[in-house]
Image (cartoon, rainbow, N blue to C red; front, side):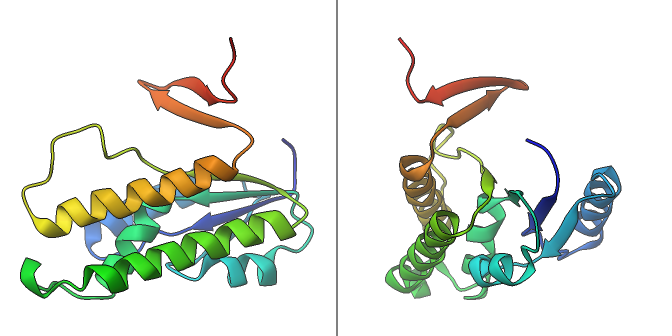
Length: 162
């Protein structure tokens, strides 16, 4: 899609292994790309740091939703305030949609599909899967194009072509 690119990284280095993954991603990015690292409230940071970027890559919604969950600590399943977390996730995603609609740039949003595997055994895991699924639905509804990557092969699922 061309330059200039703003890369929005949502990963948080919670341990050494994740720090190493982040460093590998940083080394692999083209030097010409601008990068911001932000764990939540992406939209305001994108607007502030956009500069002349024509393409914004958000990597990734999966970690963004995890970051929101982590704000509530490691509570046991019964203590989880699901409605508060759901409101936070929905707010964050709706803010991102508004940003996409207002900013004069093309957006590439990276996320994972976690609803096709096993049902998680914990309530926290099930809530995470459900809230990420809702976030993905909101973003996919707004997107002009949606691709599902399977074994490194992109499958276009929106727009539907007959």
